[in-house]
Length: 372
Image (cartoon, rainbow, N blue to C red; front, side, top):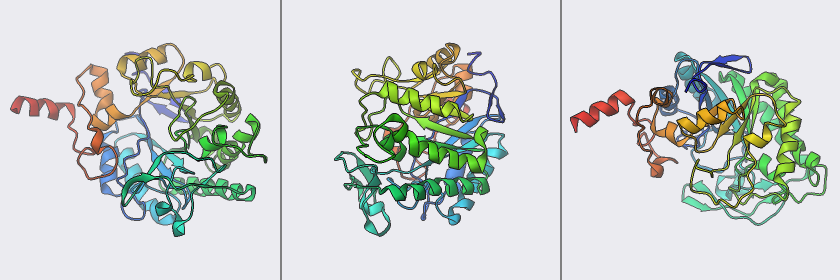
């Protein structure tokens, strides 16, 4: 795996290998959407010298949450908690990017200020669930944002990004995938607007590009990134021309000299077997033709498939999710071709240290196996 474990520049940073911690919603923040010592321990465990980590989806605005227990940076009170995390990562020689998100219509009134309706580009019926004190419950039907409200939402991302500077992050990734607010504006299955933010590719991409430029005004372009899910259907997402849309978006982002774009691969063709195989996939191989900068690919990769996509030149780094949850020392295990701990899906979202910081490192696992 010479490619996977070769160094690479990401923005201004020299990264020692190409195994990236994917942004993983784990819902372990404390009261007030504030990270605590448990979260700091989790990230520290998954840090190796010169590594790149992407923090979990972090709420950018007070009305932007879809999951109780998700962390935020929409208030100054949340900065110190994140500083625990970034200090822990930096103490082990790693770099960590802040991922900012807004759930948009993927929320419930229980998570909204004053019990209001979630917001989105248009009032389009959809399924999906949010996580509240009552557990997983259906989303509340959303209202459509007024044109004049969008500038305020862009400003929320800018100010959250500024708090990310104070919190000690190394860069910012905007989460424009997985059916959240940017994705909702991008795809015409959810965006039925007739103003400057609906209709054409240019109009539907306007919100994302405005927010990206706003974050660049804080961080500089080479410390800003965007995550896209060109084949994603999570959250009842769909588009009539996904290839046209996402290649347009990639070409526009290419003009901004970003640190990277982060692409979620379709979970088919041997990557993962839990999505239908009749989708029209748009992924790194397609996007590469329109984006020559750094690409991180994610989506059910194993060591051999990560090596293959890097060797093919379709991606430069690979983000790992579930295997990184279960294996805090995943880069070393992949490098040495060591067996992996199995992951425990029921403990993915919310809870305690169980299924979070109690997965053993390889030496610990081997010792436990011998003792058994």
